[in-house]
Figure 1 (cartoon, rainbow, N blue to C red):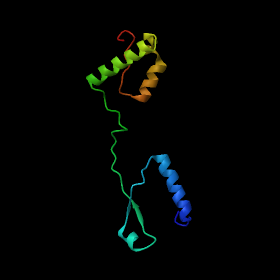
Figure 2: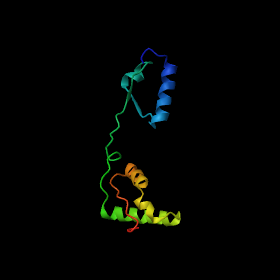
Figure 3: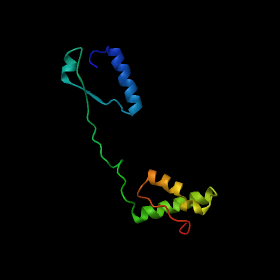
Figure 4: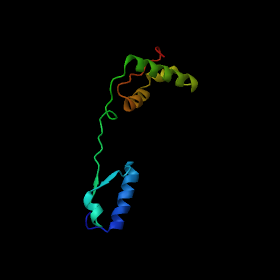
Length: 107
């Protein structure tokens, strides 16, 4: 809000940066150096959808995931039938929809 006190705006900006993980990377325009009330412009960060899109697993990635799952099940002493449990499959589907949990026979 442009009508808010500068101290209040600074506190709000600090709070928002702490919640969003923004590093506060800012550029001060040339007008800011010549005047006391300079304009601060935020840099636009280029982002991609790679962190949000679930790409299909390659055969090698699926094999590695199955091995890691098997090691976890054996180490935690969990029955192999967990691979057939519908709630476990739903959990994995939320985490990584493209990963298909192997059945207890495959494990």
